[in-house]
View 1 (spheres, one colour):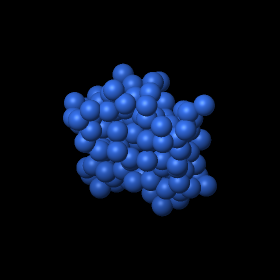
View 2 (tube, helix red, strand yellow):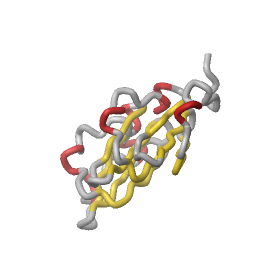
View 3 (cartoon, helix red, strand yellow):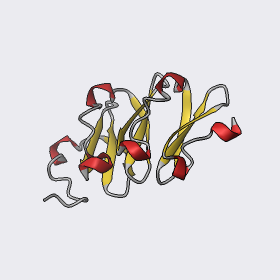
View 4 (cartoon, helix red, strand yellow):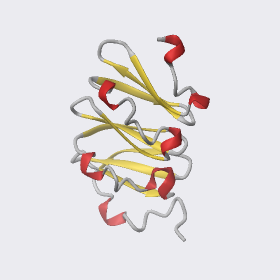
Amino acid sequence: RQLVGDSSAVQDRLKHVQQIQAANLAFAAILADGSVVTWGNRISGGDCSAVQDRLINVNQVQAANAAFAAILADGSVVSWGNPEVGGDNSAVQDQLKSVQQVQATDGAFAAILANGSVVTWGSSRFAGDSSAVR
């Protein structure tokens, strides 16, 4: 059983780290080549293998409680972790273009687009549904 802070399984890949973000039970590190290395609780974002092939040219990573969202150089966003609290952005993926910034609550994400609009996803309990204020 791996402890959350135990990065020994990925230690050899943690070189030229540019940024680290922490979820409640997992970490994500952006490397100088724009790739991402994760460790910790698998369900909480410590395992990004399902989206690893899309995590290229990553500019920024933001963490919620049990999920991560990465802004890529092309302005798109890749999310992973617990799908109920922001780890799945497929419902809004087509809207996530020209993303400038992403912020998080415990269970949702909000992205600011270049045109000044905001796109949210994740649990409505954690403000993941902004349809009432659009």
